[in-house]
Length: 278
Ligand SMILES: C[S@@+](CC[C@H](N)C(=O)[O-])C[C@H]1O[C@@H](n2cnc3c(N)ncnc32)[C@H](O)[C@@H]1O
Image (cartoon, rainbow, N blue to C red; front, side):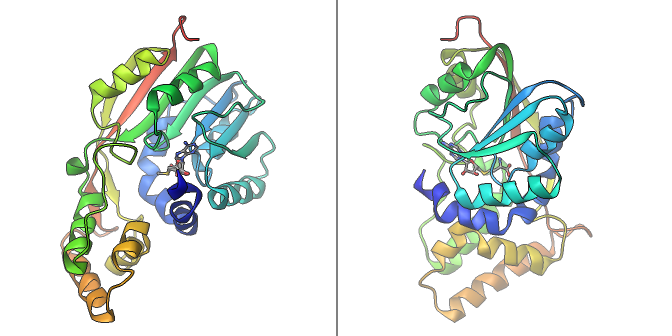
């Protein structure tokens, strides 16, 4: 949690536009079928810099959206973006979604783009989200499949830790990007937390690392990520240059004319609040 309220959130806020360009296919999957003009109240969990909350607010013209996040820096970006878009039906609050009770509840749609994998106790967090939801509310989120199926993440991490002689920092268990990688675990957690009609569908779009751009853009993006900054914190200039060179060499062959392209694998998870949710 400290990671997101501190350096992790600051870093993401700094590169928010690049993350958005990289993650654009997942915003489309999350909100593609979401109708315009609804009166829905929407909760965006781990809303970050506000992209999906803002998109929902543009569609829920007679409704309202609340984005909740741990990171002040990201919420500041979100607020600026919403103001720039002239939206008055979206609010952002700094809180832990595992325990938050926003005043606007109950929500008709609880959604998240990659914001629900970091709970210390996912069972109790998803139970809290069920308590914030209206009786027939929908839950809809995207989360990553296994790290091994997401080379956009793993390959740069491996290059950086190898050339910098640093310990690998990615986690495959416990709170972290890949904590919801197993579909059965998702189903078990949600069912016990008061959600029913659970669906888990694969999303496997090609992603451009840091969004469309040059090889050097992608190298620059990767080197500003928190893991890279930490791995290279004590590195000599020569080691840092070796790392950048190794990334450049690997990315060159992956450039598809638009950007450095990688396969990705996520789950699109859907559910309804169960009648027995408490
Ligand atoms: C990978 S980022 C995704 C951000 C945003 N949803 C997007 O797609 O651009 C994960 C987000 O979840 C937030 N987050 C993690 N744990 C949280 C919690 N317990 N409560 C609220 N936000 C949380 C982080 O601060 C971060 O903004």
